[in-house]
Amino acid sequence: MKIYVPLDSAAVALGADDVAAAITSYAAKAGISVEIVRNGSRGMVWLEPLVEIEDAQGRRAFGPLSPADVPALLEGTLKSLGRVEDIAFFARQTRLTFARCGLIDPLDLTSYAAHGGLVGLKRALSMSAQQTVEEVTASGLRGRGGAGFPTGLKWETVRSAQASQKYIVCNADEGDSGTFADRMLMEGDPFSLIEGMVIAGLAVGATRGYVYLRSEYPVAIRVMRAAVSIARENALLGEDILGTGTAFDVDIRVGAGAYVCGEETALLNSLEGKRGTVRAKPPLPALHGFMGQPTVVNNVISLATIPVIFEHGAAHYAAFGIGRSKGTVTLQLAGNVKYGGLFEAGFGMTLGDVVTDIGGGTATGKPVKAVQVGGPLGAFMRPDQFETPIGYEEFDNAGGLIGHAGLTVFDDSADMGALAQFAMEFCAIESCGKCTPCRIGSTRGVETIARIRNGDHAAIPLLEDLCDTMRDGSLCALGGFTPYPVLSALNGWPQDFGVTTAEVTQ
Image (cartoon, rainbow, N blue to C red; front, top):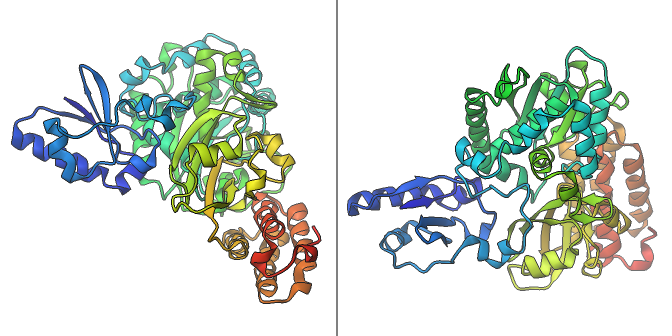
């Protein structure tokens, strides 16, 4: 009997390790032969720990499971959820980047290859660097870390640059509230990220890669380090990739938890051993990045999607999505939502479909008041905006941003004035201090919102001017995007600030 018990951080937080220990203990006492596989998560957090039993009939799911359920599980009397693939939340997805996540042992390279792994790398090894970049460009892949910048254009800039050394840097510093896709991928399918980084190195002429991981992800750090060692042992990394004579290697680096190090230039400073502060641009990291050399800086999901593109072809990937938003988006539903978890589908679903249909509305059963999309710097979207399709330009036109595609749901008990003040406080605490609009503006913003909420309505124009200055004058998105949650809350729910619609000028 093969039993899959997730090692994913969310599952572990909900008792997965205790369940695994209980299975081992009970099986030994009952004389039942079991093989426990610690897989990644299937992404349905409300069902964690989600345990699967594989037998002659396939894999059957049980969850959420507790140690007390183990005897019934092993004796065959516990009611099953059926196949994971038939659960409505999962069945509606288009799993490309996350196709293997939760399906395989994340550190079993043989299983990885049996489920499509390495097909993309082998194809890329047969192509020229220019052809490889052209394939990525044709796929329409854009940066999944938040900026939405065309991946192929970034790669071509680095490929064309003249330098003795180039680098691939994976930004795994997933600091946005309500986001966990990077962590899930690294814990559940680490070889896809490694494969994507190797292909990126082939494409631009880089021989060194770094994964910059946040210290708050101990399971991901452990799994990634183990995966890198296994990849080296099997010639996926090193001086002779799959016997082709091509060199590329990866190292894991752990940051200290600064939110601003999710910004690529602050990340590069930290990676170099410097203080994590934002660099002025130009020069761009693509030309003057890590150690002053041309550097590709891509997010985990962007790089892990590369093998999919090369396995199935650029046209296959580009066929999904809407407008200029090609492929799939890995939505992360969190906050006050009934069905929280990761949902991968083609761009184009409406925000309302995701929140009310797929997410099931609020966990409390109360009406949805707001959804913050894109982490702590994202705008609060109102229910009357729920027809907005999930796409980069479509969200921009609606005054929002997709960012890393985290959705945090709030019911009608939420105080939007307090949430706006929290956004400014977050910026003030996390600011690297490099630029005045962010460093001083956020501090003044906290004070100004407090004045408004305490009845000083004459401060509203001051807050709006302050947000304009932060948006236009900040060096990076931390100060530049903080006005999104603040002004969207003020304009959408002025009553929560104690003011009227007429008093809000923007």
